[in-house]
Length: 436
Image: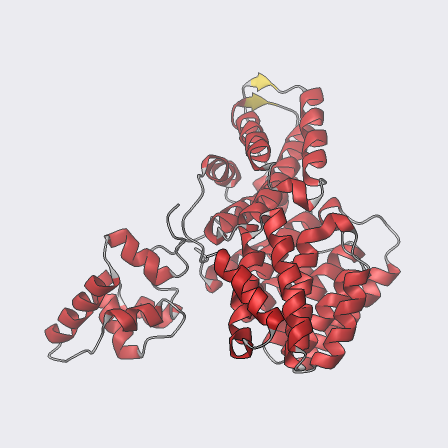
């Protein structure tokens, strides 16, 4: 399998068929055309692709090489001006079916960075908060769609998405097939407005679930597109909570990839139209995480309090897409926030209590939470216990086939490197090395 592309600059190179050495050579030529010199090397390009930001002069040279207008560089910032970035289709313009069809027909993408810029994602969230879903309503002529068949699709989709995490790695092709069928029905079928709403709601749920499958395998560009389609379909169906929940999934992806400010902006818009208490609790919890990463403790604690209050006072059934939300999630994510805010001892208490409440079916979540706990112990100097928990997290991630959880431990393992004399660290680094 080809090595995954993890940065927009690497993708821009790939589009042109250039190696890092060739790109460095073109940057030097661009400098000479300006009667300047550039010390760009393959090593410097490699650093840029590892999230080291080029200085303004280097970015201008790169813009010359990729033929990107300099005003776009200034407006979008690094790395969002690079070739390969995309713009989400606006809501309320009749584009829902086109977006669904593109998602249903899309093969796995080698890219793992986000294909939509932060500004584009914020714009999509703003549209969600302000555009009336009735504007997107439409109808299609064709063969009559059987309501019983739609009911079967809905039931089997529920069954597939409710399987324990360990089984979900085997359901991808079935979910893809369901989505293609739903897109075909919407494209070629004849149906009542009620059945149209059901089909769009089903398409939204399928796209949301498939997006999580892609996200768990680090195919972030693909996850973006599926979630974008889910937002469109939920908007068409008038399911405000599901649409807001999918926007919060995109926000969570931004948090995972280190873009918390984009997540906060999107979640603010999503919350403006989220109704049910459990759904609102989840969005507040994710917003708290983003505020913690931004070192904004007051906003973080405020959102944590809101999440806990909403979850504890919820009396109506939670929407299916967030029915898993529980005090365990509030506890562990509170701990994750405390780690970011420099309070590892308090974080450890919250995380260990939360993990104890998790049901066995949520092993993917447990793998992520164990990594958090390992990080909190590492910050307290408990190297041996931290390494053992990290190793447990790695084993769980391998069992369920969630490569993003494996990558989480890979990233954490670099902090253990100075402690090779500890046998637990030695075992952890050995296991990590076997995964490369």
